[in-house]
Image: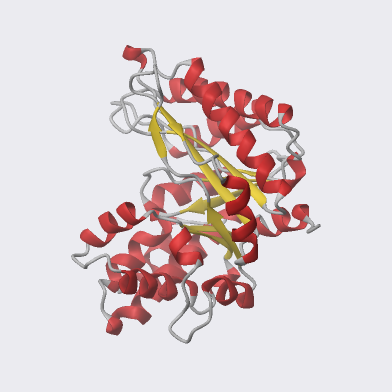
Length: 344
């Protein structure tokens, strides 16, 4: 049986974090539409290879979450992507949920599907080289409509726990992702209240399903104001309230917390992580790391634009963004670092 704790610890190694490159086909199409290139199998493969083979990026990236298509693909030289990453010392992972669908009897709320047949899919993913998994649940705040309801929170918590137990059974480290969406005009206090309630439900469900906490990671949202809230909390407030929420809800046995960026700007996501890790801050029982998608990929995607001639420039932009988030793991990121690649 693989040492799942060793894998979990490696994913949150100091100075490193996870690249979320698990965009579904519709989502990556939206990304490609933004740079006016067609979302073909060949273009998706070329873009992912650009990221994975960025020189030196393994200094800051510990693991990569892949989509089903990507895990089955090969680099231009015929090397499977899982082996490309493994050879670099980067751990391959896989998104295993089937997406959020309307929750029956709960207008405006969603439940993540994908438990049917998951045991068999996990075995196949392990054989293909994946060593960790990810399942995302989405929770919407709409206080005027009474959302979220306990029904939605508990249903998603139970699905997350069942997924996590199956992953560990298959020898894979589960990343449990309950995301409180930024959409809406809710205050940061409302986000804190819902985040606490959600994490309490998630860890109760994980306990019922006998998930080994030492062999998993948590991928939560940061506690932030809703995107259309007129009062946006500053960086220090976000950091303080996020850590407060985690201390109230996350057991010390969990090795690490890998935050999602959740629609934040590249700089804001890095600044928030940095503030939580700043030297002199009170010690936490878990590593505070990142598992960013768009907040790592937006600069290289805009630099690349589907052109082979732009690959080196795009890789430079990706390396730069990864390095800044690596610095945020130590609390040493600063605004001046943002300007270092101003010409890219």
